[in-house]
Length: 242
Image (cartoon, rainbow, N blue to C red; front, side, top):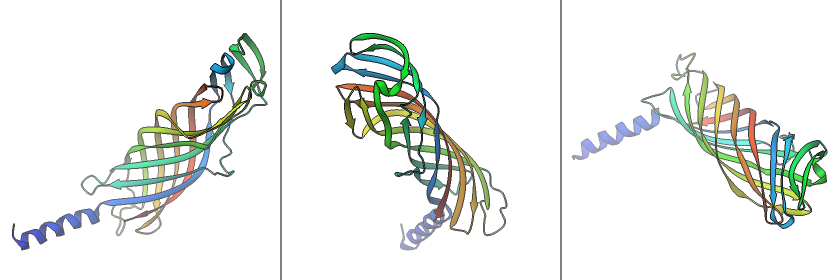
């Protein structure tokens, strides 16, 4: 390959990369997790029980707050289709003062009653937090494509993809306390939002997200707990494109 040809290839590749759109975004928001059953298995106390319909507070605006980060890429060849890597941090706190139905075995004895959750589970939260990371496949509809906004100044979009849960539970169950980071398995998420270009580089967006998966965490006393996560998010964010 001649030097002239090599220079031409580099120029073409660089031009293609320059026309592609990569965006780094950050966002804040609010999460609402639906009531779900909490199952606790604690070997040290011979306890294995299910607490039905536990209510989860989000405390999204209390420290540490809800936040997320995302890197998005739209290739020039297919400007309506994009891929992203998304990270979200949100929280859940069991409302232990509520009375719930509990069934199974507790401290070696059968149990089938309704009582305050805090009688047996003194505290249960994933507050540092429910951390999710995963890819998204995105599709956007460009509107108002007048120069210099060749891909549209207003961009409604949707996306879907798998995610992995990395949880940090803090709980006290039957007097045993534990706290640590741990992987919690796979789930999925879907997003729908609108992006607005403030300038050629800076943008703002609003979005509704939903994720589903299972939190599987350790509890003290050589135990474990799990609950189904079904969480809806509302977020606002800004991005920078290059």
